[in-house]
Image 1 (cartoon, rainbow, N blue to C red):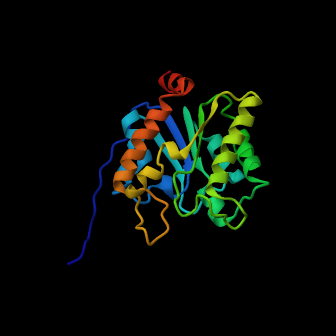
Image 2: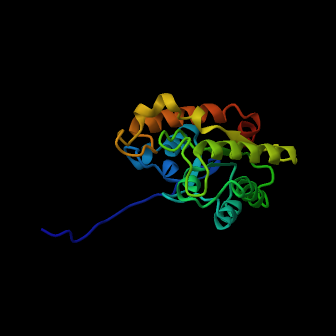
Image 3: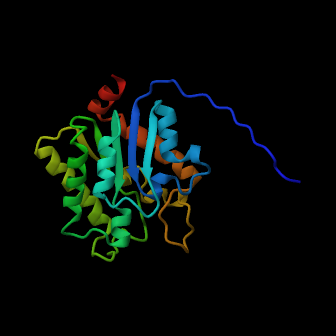
Length: 218
C-alpha cells in the first residue's frame, strides 16, 4: 500500500493578538513536554491570548548578537528570555563576560524596542549544576546572580521596562520530581506535568509587572 496523495486545507488566522517573542534554550523549546502545544510557552500563549514567536533552540541561547538583532527586528508587545543554562554548560561565557553579554543583548534589542516590556529570566533549577563550575568557571548560581546584576545595572541606567525573574520562582528545588530526566541522568528539563506548572507560575509572575500588563492590554 502506498500513499499517493495528500490534500490540505488551511485558513489564515485573522485574529489581532498581542505579539510575544521569547528567546531560550531547549527548556523553552519544549523538551520534556507531552506535545508542542503543551510546552510551557505554548500554554502561556494560549492562556494569555498572545501570538507567540519562539526563538528557543536546544543547545543554543548564548546571547549571540545575531539573535539579539533578530529579536530587535521582530514586532512585539512583550519580550522575554530565559538565559544561562547553555552558557554555563558549554562555557561560551565566563565570569568576565556574562553580565556584559546580557547588557549588550538587551541594548541591541532596545534599538527598536525602547519601551517594550522585556523580562530577563534566569535558568530554572538544575540540581546537577547549581554549584558546579562549567568549562568557563561559572556555576548556575553565578549565572542567576549575574543576570540579576545586569538587569539592575540596566534599570539604574534608565531602562525601567526591563525586569528580572528568578528562574527558581518558576521551577525550583521542590519541583525536581517533575523533571523529565531520572536521577541517574543529568536533570535539566521539566517533564509533561512540569511544563504545566511552569506555565502557571510564569503567567502569575508576568501579572506582577504593571507596565507589561498595561502594554499588552493596550
